[in-house]
Length: 126
Image 1 (cartoon, one colour):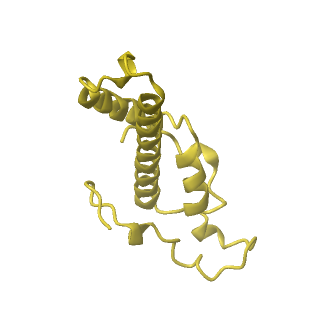
Image 2 (cartoon, rainbow, N blue to C red):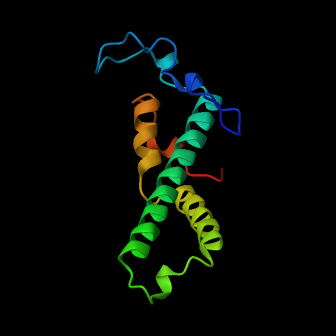
């Protein structure tokens, strides 16, 4: 599965040498530092997923609001729906860049080694 940034899900598999480690086992110091390219790639993918998650949530919230609105309500009018969808996408990317929901952080905690200090996983522009 490829994305527009040529990220592949098979590239986000656990780092070599960690797949067979027992849970809670401490690896040698050389393996405690992950490849910076892997960290950047995993971070980008996690933030993109959080952006998708937020975008989908906003889309569902708007759809529910339209369904619940009365016949003469301004929320029933679909005239500006395309612009609202575009604004929701921009808002979702901004919120994901700030890690507002913590989805990206939860994904990174699973993808990156436990020995990775939290300071090295910094939010950035995607």
